[in-house]
Image (cartoon, rainbow, N blue to C red; front, side):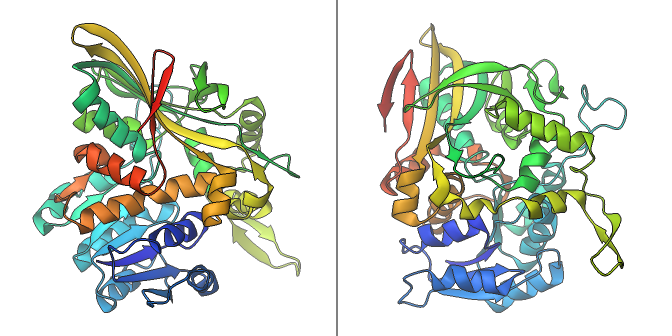
Amino acid sequence: MRVLLVGAGGVGTAITRIAARRDFFGHFVVADYDLARAEAAVAALDDRAGRFVARRIDASDQAAVIALLTEERCDVLLNATDPRFVMPLFEAALAAGSHYVDMAMSLSRPHAAQPYARCGVKLGDEQFARADAWRKSGRLALVGMGVEPGLSDVFARYAADELFDEIEEIGIRDGANLTVEGYDFAPSFNIWTTIEECLNPPVVYERERGWFTTEPFSEPEVFDFPDGIGPVECVNVEHEEVLLVPRWVDARRVTFKYGLGDDFIDKLKTLHALGLDATEPVTVRDADGAQVRVSPRDVVAACLPDPATLGERMTGKTCAGTWVKGVKNGQPREVYLYHVVDNQWSMRTYGSQAVVWQTAVNPVVALELVAGGVWAGAGVLGPEALPPRPFLDLLTAYGSPWGIREHGSEQQD
């Protein structure tokens, strides 16, 4: 397999460090708008075989991406950029005849008249609109293949296949006890994406209603996370799983709730109140008095520390998981399938902080399954469209086991 990775930020760099230990590919192009960043990611690897090369690419330039895929004869494009660049990269892979993998889907747009009741353009709608073209090409576009979405969707499919006869609700629940020394506000993931998912209207799915929206941070609940993390208040947040899971898994209700904390929520609300979450550029003056156009959200991102650099200051664990409630053999059942990463372990083992490492490991596992023909298909597919057990077994073989909690008992697999 020959891979083009677009994006050498925190997650992209973690992907290279994980992939460098595997042998399922022969050539791996690391491309970024900032060539120095791509070169630094490659230089940090023990790549005696010379499988990794660095290239510069503008992810918004579809023609340039097609040319790079063709020149490097890449079988697959792995998108590790922020969601603004999903569609040009997605279309470039299709045009070049490559497979495609991303970790976040095409952007949503709230309903103009009823944003907190009805869906407008949903996450992934633009990609699923191209499903026929991908099927006809015979190529696979595997969308939402990070940790959430991604591993959480694999858990949902595993629960449906092996743990339940009927499912009442699938709820993705994400929580952590991570702290960052020296910062009052230092998000552990890309702030551009964090603002997008936290301030957009959350989507809920119900079999009788289909997809609908609600208020941001609605339906708070305290969820007790495993492995010493403990109780964390979680709230509704817009996320891809709610748009993906119901397409392949039969459940009466699907939700996503994120453990943000009151302080984090208050800061996001303040950014929104001030208009600093906006993506439309505004005119400001630079140091020389010249007028320049700049996106307020990009300014916020520039003022905050790069999440990839926080690992040495970070302590604690992060947990991604899927809570499922339903019936098995005529009896009620409730389980939580989860994956925990300790920041101390990920820093010691890979030099990557826990949140970006947990996101990065899953597309690498998926690529290995695709390379081996274990995961195969044509069209636009979510992770829950493919067999879950090979993925979970290989994730464990990567040295990162997952667990199941049922009625207060825990087991690791």
